[in-house]
Amino acid sequence: MQMMMEYPQYRMLEGSETLYAIEGPRHAIEFQPLGSNQWMMHAHFASDYPRFVWMQELLLKAAQARAVSKEEFVDLVNAREVHEPLACLGRFNASEAHEALRFETNVELQALTTFGVSSISRHHVLVGSDEDIREALKAAKQNDWEVLIVGGGSNVLMHSDWEGLTLQQGIKGIQVLSDDGNRVEVLVGAGESWHDWVLHAVEQGWNGIENLALIPGSVGASPMQNIGAYGVEVKDCFLWLEAVHQQTGELRRFDHNACEFGYRESIFKQREKDEWVIVRVAFVLERNAPLRMEYGAIQSELKHLQHHEIAHKNVMEAVMRIRRSKLPDPALMGNAGSFFKNPILDERAFEAVLSNHPEVVHYTLEDGTFKLAAGWLIEQAGWKGQRRGNCGVHERQALVLVNYGGASGQEIWQLALDIIEDVKVKFGVELQPEVNQIRTS
Image (cartoon, rainbow, N blue to C red; front, side, top):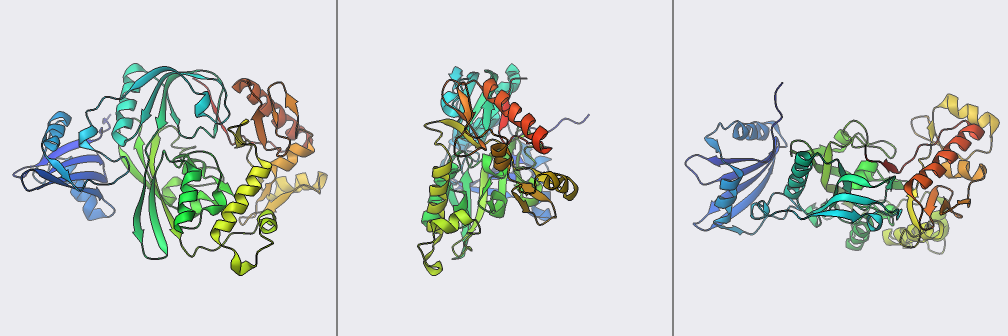
C-alpha cells in the first residue's frame, strides 16, 4: 500500500538559493533571493496542467530540485528578511514554523458555543495559521486525541465532556483578490465572525450577502453548512475555499462544484466529513448585485421606502430587525438558531401530507420537490413555547430550542428527539437536526 505524502515538503533548486515550501500537489510558497539579505515571496496555485506538472517535478525532486529538511529550510529562510511579506491569511510563514503551540488542559467550552452548555475539553489549542493546524493535528495523532474543530460554536450541541483535542480556528483577515469596479473577489480567514464579515462587506459596497446578516458562527463554517436565509445561500456568492487535510497536512482548493453544495449540506458534512480543516474562503460579490426582497417580511420592513430608494444596507438592516424580533440573542439565552432543517419531500410524499393537512405551509422548489416549514409543523404539534426544566422551545420561533440556563446537552437532545417523534406521528414527516450533535466516541 502506497503511503500518503505528508506536507509541507521543502525543496531547494540546485545551483540556486531559491526555496519552496510545497503545501499540496497544487500549492507552494516560493522564496526567491532578492540581493544578499532579502527574500521575495510568491504564492503559487497550479490552476492549469503545465503549472501542475511543474509542481509535480518539484515534488519528485526533478527539475534540479533537492529535498531539504524543515529545520534546514527554516534556518535558510530566517537568515534573510522577507521583502514585502506575502499577505495570505494564515499561509505558510517560515519564521513561525518553529514556534511551539500552546496547548491547554481542562478548558471549559461553555463560552465557546452559543448553546452555552457546560462541557470540558481535556486538551485545547488556538490556531492562527495552516502550520499551527498541522502541528496541532500531529500532536493529536501522536497522543491519540480525537479532534473537534471549533469555530463560532454556533452549530454544535455538546452532549458530554470532550476527551480529545478541541482545535479553535483563529485564522483572521480579509484580502481583496481582484476588483474590476463591480465584481469583487475577496478572501476571508476562516476564524472571522460571519456577521462581522457581512457588516464589513456591505460597508465596503460589496453586495450579495446582506440577507445573511446576523447568522451566528464563523466564516469557515459557512460553506460547510451552506448557511442560508431569506432567499440567499452561501453557495450563491461562493468562489472557492482552501482546507488542510487532517491526516497529511495537504492544502487543497475546493471550487464550487467540488463542495457539492445542497440544502444546509456540503461535501464536508458528508463524504469528506472530519477529513479537512477549512482555513480560508473566497467570495465573489458585486457592487451592483440585485436586491433580494422576495420574502414578505423584508417587504413589510421596507414598505416606507420607494423601490428606487432601497439600498443593500437597507435590506441588511431589515433582515437584522426581523431576526432580532424572532430569535433570541445567544449572549442572553443559549441557542444555536434553527435546530431543525425544513424537510424536503418528493411529490408522492408531499401529496400524502397534503391530503391529511391541506393547510400545511410549503414551498415548491425548482426541481419539483416541496419544502415544508419545520417551524409550522412543530408549532401545530403544540411545542412552541413549551418548557422542560432548563430548556425548551422558544416562544416566538418554534424552530429554535433554547437553554434557559443550566441545561445539559443530553437534556436538549432528548427534547429534540421527542419533538421529532411527535411530528412524525402527527404529520408523517421526520425532522432532521441542522445542529451537529457532538459526542466523544
